[in-house]
Picture: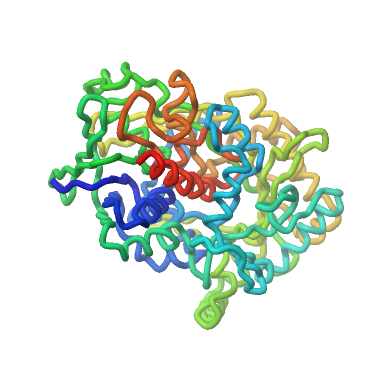
Length: 536
């Protein structure tokens, strides 16, 4: 059994950052264990390729939530990255730091030292901002690109509609003026996805003190008393153990980090007893406090060409591919989530409560054997969608059995509070107001059913229950806080009541941030590495 200083479980958005930061001095031996493969698929590198990886079991856990009565008894599909780079390798690339109040709320929840001023400095340290003119600002390894010179011309109607309502417009949702309609910045460089594996892990792997093992299933954490000393895993069907001289760090994500704790005897005692697992630490919060964003799309046929015209016909695909090969630009170098922004649904609110998306494309999901194909529609179309930013419903993720391969029980408990229902209606009404502007009506040939523009409040809510889905931002299942009675980890990401063990991924968020969670996950890991090295 080889011994390392640090064992990182999960080579996802957080794990890759940790591997680079903890190994930089050359003094620490770092092992990173990943259940998936290396992620060499060209669809990962290609920004628009997430349409191919969205249902690909080779790189995707393809989880499903339990049926929810509040969503018409449906099971929600939960894609999660099972590949080096994690969910950041298969996501839609929107780079959103989160709003300042998100992190002030983190600190108020007991995550001392995680307020906005501190995390903003961490973002600035890890980022390089690339302007539309190619100018660079910052020296961080993670490239964040302004693609405003490449977005589809149909999006101009969205900005005109927002201005017509007197709503704000901003150049960058990550700036001090972060409220309003914006072109989304994406983490790309040279027309290729700049996820954490490319930005952080690839440089780290050039060091002799970093070891990456892929296709390895970590089954339990090894403890001596209440001190974590290593992990037990399986490679190619054979058991193997790895020992940690300093710490074991879980970076397996909001689904798999709490699962691994529970399989190792850390979780609700009644649950562990039910599955014949000896309880090391009775901690009901492991797997609890689950938060996620729910969103919905509204589809429209357009009066002018959209991305459908470029990406549906063979000649359009060929032209886009040729442009990409020659210039690394064009629709293949972008996310289809081209613009959107943070908005207050009513002017009396102190902070934005909704995130919007405006996509110059519509598509159909078509089953094809064991996979589902995402295909642009054969007519011009576009989507407007929204997600309430700070839901108050709380769910759980738990093991369904003692076998590490047993599926997790994901119970989001969606729309279980009156405030969440009120924010759904507020977001839908905001989309209605924008779509009824003269500017947007110029782009509408007709609404695709169900028609956003003709629904009253009862119909809007019923439609949301029937069609909404996760926006793939699960957090907080091992949440940070000062009180072990309400949290799993402390403000330095150490698991309460145990030694040598931390959780460093989105499961440690005290609360879900207002927008996309990939950027704050990388930020969390970047700052966590500083804390780990300080403690060492």
